[in-house]
Length: 301
Image (spheres, rainbow, N blue to C red):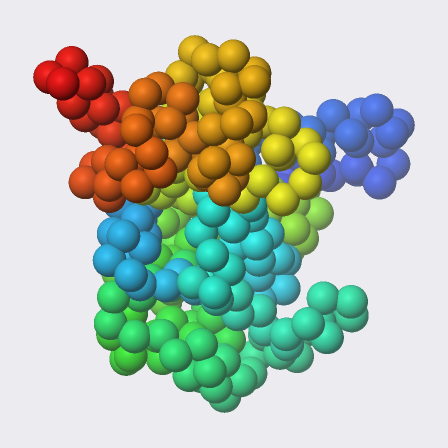
Protein backbone atom coordinates (compact mmCIF):
# COMPACT_ATOMS: atom_id res chain seq x y z
CA UNK A 1 0.00 0.00 0.00
CA UNK A 2 1.15 3.55 -0.73
CA UNK A 3 2.46 5.40 2.30
CA UNK A 4 0.09 8.28 1.56
CA UNK A 5 -2.88 5.84 1.61
CA UNK A 6 -1.91 4.10 4.86
CA UNK A 7 -3.75 4.66 8.12
CA UNK A 8 -2.00 6.79 10.71
CA UNK A 9 -2.30 5.10 14.11
CA UNK A 10 -2.40 8.49 15.83
CA UNK A 11 -5.71 9.20 14.08
CA UNK A 12 -7.61 6.48 15.90
CA UNK A 13 -10.61 8.15 17.56
CA UNK A 14 -9.79 11.59 16.12
CA UNK A 15 -13.45 12.13 15.20
CA UNK A 16 -14.44 11.68 18.86
CA UNK A 17 -11.69 13.91 20.32
CA UNK A 18 -12.25 17.40 21.73
CA UNK A 19 -11.47 19.99 19.03
CA UNK A 20 -8.22 21.14 20.65
CA UNK A 21 -6.97 17.55 20.87
CA UNK A 22 -7.87 16.83 17.24
CA UNK A 23 -6.24 20.07 16.12
CA UNK A 24 -3.13 19.18 18.12
CA UNK A 25 -2.88 15.91 16.21
CA UNK A 26 -3.33 17.72 12.90
CA UNK A 27 -0.69 20.25 13.87
CA UNK A 28 1.79 17.50 14.77
CA UNK A 29 1.10 15.94 11.38
CA UNK A 30 2.01 19.20 9.66
CA UNK A 31 5.21 19.52 11.71
CA UNK A 32 6.20 15.95 10.80
CA UNK A 33 5.60 16.76 7.13
CA UNK A 34 7.82 19.82 7.35
CA UNK A 35 10.61 17.83 9.03
CA UNK A 36 10.53 15.24 6.25
CA UNK A 37 12.16 17.74 3.86
CA UNK A 38 15.55 17.57 5.54
CA UNK A 39 16.51 14.26 3.94
CA UNK A 40 16.02 15.76 0.46
CA UNK A 41 18.14 18.92 0.67
CA UNK A 42 20.86 17.63 -1.67
CA UNK A 43 18.32 16.73 -4.34
CA UNK A 44 16.52 20.06 -3.98
CA UNK A 45 19.87 21.83 -4.39
CA UNK A 46 20.58 19.89 -7.59
CA UNK A 47 17.13 20.71 -8.95
CA UNK A 48 17.54 24.42 -8.18
CA UNK A 49 20.87 24.49 -10.01
CA UNK A 50 19.34 22.73 -13.02
CA UNK A 51 16.41 25.17 -13.18
CA UNK A 52 18.72 28.19 -12.85
CA UNK A 53 20.93 26.87 -15.62
CA UNK A 54 17.89 26.50 -17.85
CA UNK A 55 16.74 30.07 -17.22
CA UNK A 56 20.27 31.48 -17.59
CA UNK A 57 20.65 29.76 -20.95
CA UNK A 58 17.36 31.06 -22.33
CA UNK A 59 15.24 28.01 -21.53
CA UNK A 60 11.79 27.82 -19.99
CA UNK A 61 10.35 26.16 -16.87
CA UNK A 62 7.23 24.03 -16.75
CA UNK A 63 5.31 23.20 -13.58
CA UNK A 64 3.18 20.08 -14.01
CA UNK A 65 0.72 18.29 -11.77
CA UNK A 66 -2.84 17.20 -11.05
CA UNK A 67 -5.21 17.64 -8.11
CA UNK A 68 -3.81 19.07 -4.88
CA UNK A 69 -0.22 18.34 -6.01
CA UNK A 70 -0.93 20.36 -9.15
CA UNK A 71 -2.17 23.24 -7.01
CA UNK A 72 1.15 23.28 -5.14
CA UNK A 73 3.00 23.39 -8.47
CA UNK A 74 0.71 26.10 -9.82
CA UNK A 75 1.15 28.29 -6.72
CA UNK A 76 4.94 28.22 -7.00
CA UNK A 77 4.95 28.85 -10.74
CA UNK A 78 2.65 31.84 -10.52
CA UNK A 79 4.86 33.53 -7.92
CA UNK A 80 8.07 33.58 -9.97
CA UNK A 81 7.29 36.70 -11.98
CA UNK A 82 6.40 38.88 -9.01
CA UNK A 83 9.13 37.53 -6.73
CA UNK A 84 12.05 37.15 -9.10
CA UNK A 85 11.02 39.11 -12.20
CA UNK A 86 11.07 35.99 -14.41
CA UNK A 87 8.68 36.73 -17.30
CA UNK A 88 5.51 34.64 -17.18
CA UNK A 89 6.09 33.85 -20.86
CA UNK A 90 8.96 31.63 -19.71
CA UNK A 91 6.87 29.76 -17.15
CA UNK A 92 4.43 27.08 -18.36
CA UNK A 93 1.88 25.74 -15.88
CA UNK A 94 0.28 22.47 -16.91
CA UNK A 95 -2.58 21.56 -14.57
CA UNK A 96 -4.67 18.49 -15.37
CA UNK A 97 -8.00 19.74 -16.68
CA UNK A 98 -6.85 23.34 -17.08
CA UNK A 99 -8.66 26.41 -15.79
CA UNK A 100 -12.03 24.65 -15.61
CA UNK A 101 -10.69 22.39 -12.84
CA UNK A 102 -9.59 25.38 -10.76
CA UNK A 103 -13.22 26.19 -9.95
CA UNK A 104 -14.54 22.61 -10.04
CA UNK A 105 -11.66 20.20 -9.46
CA UNK A 106 -12.78 16.88 -10.88
CA UNK A 107 -10.65 13.75 -10.57
CA UNK A 108 -11.00 12.45 -14.13
CA UNK A 109 -8.30 14.58 -15.77
CA UNK A 110 -5.69 13.04 -13.43
CA UNK A 111 -6.00 9.81 -15.43
CA UNK A 112 -5.94 11.41 -18.89
CA UNK A 113 -2.58 10.54 -20.44
CA UNK A 114 -3.58 11.86 -23.85
CA UNK A 115 -4.41 15.24 -22.33
CA UNK A 116 -1.00 15.32 -20.66
CA UNK A 117 0.82 14.65 -23.91
CA UNK A 118 -1.16 17.31 -25.77
CA UNK A 119 -0.58 19.84 -22.96
CA UNK A 120 3.19 19.27 -23.12
CA UNK A 121 3.20 19.54 -26.92
CA UNK A 122 1.24 22.81 -26.69
CA UNK A 123 3.85 24.17 -24.25
CA UNK A 124 6.49 23.42 -26.91
CA UNK A 125 9.03 22.12 -24.40
CA UNK A 126 12.44 21.48 -25.90
CA UNK A 127 16.08 20.75 -25.21
CA UNK A 128 17.30 23.25 -22.61
CA UNK A 129 13.95 23.52 -20.84
CA UNK A 130 13.20 22.07 -17.40
CA UNK A 131 9.96 20.57 -16.07
CA UNK A 132 9.04 20.26 -12.38
CA UNK A 133 6.48 17.49 -11.87
CA UNK A 134 4.63 16.95 -8.59
CA UNK A 135 2.61 13.90 -7.53
CA UNK A 136 2.04 12.63 -4.00
CA UNK A 137 1.69 9.01 -5.15
CA UNK A 138 4.41 9.34 -7.78
CA UNK A 139 2.21 7.45 -10.21
CA UNK A 140 -0.51 9.87 -11.34
CA UNK A 141 -1.16 8.99 -15.03
CA UNK A 142 -1.38 12.63 -16.20
CA UNK A 143 1.89 13.55 -14.49
CA UNK A 144 3.78 10.46 -15.66
CA UNK A 145 2.65 10.88 -19.27
CA UNK A 146 3.61 14.55 -19.15
CA UNK A 147 7.08 13.66 -17.84
CA UNK A 148 7.68 11.10 -20.56
CA UNK A 149 6.51 13.49 -23.27
CA UNK A 150 8.69 16.29 -21.88
CA UNK A 151 11.72 14.02 -21.78
CA UNK A 152 11.10 12.87 -25.35
CA UNK A 153 11.25 16.53 -26.41
CA UNK A 154 14.64 16.97 -24.72
CA UNK A 155 13.55 18.71 -21.52
CA UNK A 156 15.05 17.71 -18.17
CA UNK A 157 12.60 16.63 -15.48
CA UNK A 158 12.56 17.14 -11.71
CA UNK A 159 10.12 14.81 -9.95
CA UNK A 160 8.67 15.41 -6.47
CA UNK A 161 6.77 12.54 -4.85
CA UNK A 162 5.90 11.32 -1.36
CA UNK A 163 6.08 7.59 -2.10
CA UNK A 164 9.13 5.45 -2.81
CA UNK A 165 9.51 3.55 -5.01
CA UNK A 166 7.37 5.23 -7.64
CA UNK A 167 7.61 5.69 -11.42
CA UNK A 168 7.96 9.47 -11.13
CA UNK A 169 11.03 9.16 -8.92
CA UNK A 170 12.43 6.23 -10.88
CA UNK A 171 12.25 8.01 -14.24
CA UNK A 172 12.87 11.70 -13.48
CA UNK A 173 16.30 13.21 -14.06
CA UNK A 174 16.40 14.56 -10.52
CA UNK A 175 14.11 12.68 -8.10
CA UNK A 176 13.08 14.40 -4.87
CA UNK A 177 11.51 12.02 -2.36
CA UNK A 178 9.51 13.73 0.39
CA UNK A 179 8.98 10.93 2.95
CA UNK A 180 5.93 12.27 4.77
CA UNK A 181 4.27 9.93 7.30
CA UNK A 182 0.74 8.58 6.67
CA UNK A 183 -1.87 11.32 6.62
CA UNK A 184 -4.00 11.93 9.70
CA UNK A 185 -6.90 11.67 7.25
CA UNK A 186 -5.85 8.70 5.12
CA UNK A 187 -5.25 9.66 1.48
CA UNK A 188 -5.88 13.37 2.04
CA UNK A 189 -2.63 14.47 0.43
CA UNK A 190 -3.60 18.14 0.51
CA UNK A 191 -2.43 17.91 4.13
CA UNK A 192 1.01 16.50 5.05
CA UNK A 193 2.09 15.61 1.51
CA UNK A 194 0.90 18.98 0.21
CA UNK A 195 2.70 20.83 3.01
CA UNK A 196 5.97 19.05 2.22
CA UNK A 197 5.55 19.71 -1.50
CA UNK A 198 4.90 23.42 -0.92
CA UNK A 199 7.94 23.76 1.34
CA UNK A 200 10.18 21.87 -1.11
CA UNK A 201 8.96 23.99 -4.04
CA UNK A 202 9.45 27.20 -2.05
CA UNK A 203 13.00 26.17 -1.27
CA UNK A 204 13.75 24.99 -4.81
CA UNK A 205 12.55 28.18 -6.51
CA UNK A 206 14.17 30.43 -3.89
CA UNK A 207 17.51 28.66 -4.31
CA UNK A 208 17.07 29.05 -8.06
CA UNK A 209 16.54 32.78 -7.49
CA UNK A 210 19.77 32.93 -5.49
CA UNK A 211 21.68 31.21 -8.31
CA UNK A 212 20.22 33.71 -10.79
CA UNK A 213 21.35 36.67 -8.67
CA UNK A 214 17.82 37.72 -7.81
CA UNK A 215 18.43 37.62 -4.02
CA UNK A 216 20.83 39.98 -2.24
CA UNK A 217 21.14 39.83 1.55
CA UNK A 218 17.66 38.33 1.72
CA UNK A 219 16.10 41.00 -0.50
CA UNK A 220 14.20 40.36 -3.75
CA UNK A 221 16.28 42.62 -5.95
CA UNK A 222 14.71 41.46 -9.21
CA UNK A 223 11.07 41.78 -8.16
CA UNK A 224 8.48 43.28 -10.46
CA UNK A 225 7.29 46.41 -8.63
CA UNK A 226 3.75 46.64 -9.98
CA UNK A 227 1.85 47.92 -6.95
CA UNK A 228 2.30 50.56 -4.25
CA UNK A 229 3.65 48.15 -1.65
CA UNK A 230 6.31 46.78 -4.01
CA UNK A 231 7.36 50.24 -5.22
CA UNK A 232 7.94 51.21 -1.60
CA UNK A 233 9.85 47.97 -0.99
CA UNK A 234 12.01 48.60 -4.06
CA UNK A 235 12.91 52.06 -2.83
CA UNK A 236 13.84 50.74 0.61
CA UNK A 237 16.06 48.08 -0.96
CA UNK A 238 17.94 50.69 -2.97
CA UNK A 239 18.43 52.77 0.18
CA UNK A 240 19.68 49.83 2.26
CA UNK A 241 22.03 48.31 -0.31
CA UNK A 242 23.55 51.52 -1.67
CA UNK A 243 23.30 53.37 1.67
CA UNK A 244 21.73 56.36 -0.04
CA UNK A 245 18.98 58.83 0.82
CA UNK A 246 15.32 58.24 0.07
CA UNK A 247 15.39 61.02 -2.50
CA UNK A 248 18.35 59.52 -4.38
CA UNK A 249 16.78 56.06 -4.23
CA UNK A 250 13.58 57.37 -5.75
CA UNK A 251 15.39 59.25 -8.52
CA UNK A 252 17.60 56.25 -9.28
CA UNK A 253 14.61 53.92 -9.52
CA UNK A 254 12.88 56.31 -11.89
CA UNK A 255 16.01 56.58 -14.04
CA UNK A 256 16.33 52.76 -13.97
CA UNK A 257 12.70 52.31 -15.04
CA UNK A 258 11.97 50.41 -11.82
CA UNK A 259 14.92 48.00 -11.94
CA UNK A 260 16.21 47.64 -8.38
CA UNK A 261 19.60 46.27 -9.46
CA UNK A 262 20.22 49.10 -11.92
CA UNK A 263 18.98 51.68 -9.41
CA UNK A 264 21.34 50.36 -6.73
CA UNK A 265 24.29 50.66 -9.09
CA UNK A 266 23.26 54.18 -10.11
CA UNK A 267 22.92 55.24 -6.48
CA UNK A 268 26.29 53.62 -5.75
CA UNK A 269 28.06 55.67 -8.42
CA UNK A 270 27.45 54.18 -11.86
CA UNK A 271 27.68 56.92 -14.49
CA UNK A 272 24.48 55.96 -16.29
CA UNK A 273 21.99 53.16 -16.93
CA UNK A 274 24.12 51.74 -19.72
CA UNK A 275 27.13 51.26 -17.46
CA UNK A 276 24.97 49.70 -14.76
CA UNK A 277 23.45 47.24 -17.22
CA UNK A 278 26.88 46.37 -18.62
CA UNK A 279 28.12 45.60 -15.12
CA UNK A 280 25.14 43.33 -14.48
CA UNK A 281 25.58 41.53 -17.80
CA UNK A 282 29.29 40.99 -17.13
CA UNK A 283 28.43 39.52 -13.73
CA UNK A 284 25.52 37.31 -14.89
CA UNK A 285 22.97 39.48 -13.13
CA UNK A 286 24.56 39.23 -9.69
CA UNK A 287 24.38 42.54 -7.88
CA UNK A 288 27.07 41.79 -5.29
CA UNK A 289 29.81 41.17 -7.85
CA UNK A 290 28.55 44.03 -10.02
CA UNK A 291 28.94 46.38 -7.05
CA UNK A 292 32.47 45.08 -6.50
CA UNK A 293 33.23 45.71 -10.16
CA UNK A 294 31.84 49.23 -9.85
CA UNK A 295 34.01 49.90 -6.80
CA UNK A 296 37.12 48.74 -8.66
CA UNK A 297 36.19 50.85 -11.68
CA UNK A 298 35.53 53.93 -9.55
CA UNK A 299 38.78 53.60 -7.58
CA UNK A 300 40.85 53.26 -10.75
CA UNK A 301 39.38 56.38 -12.37
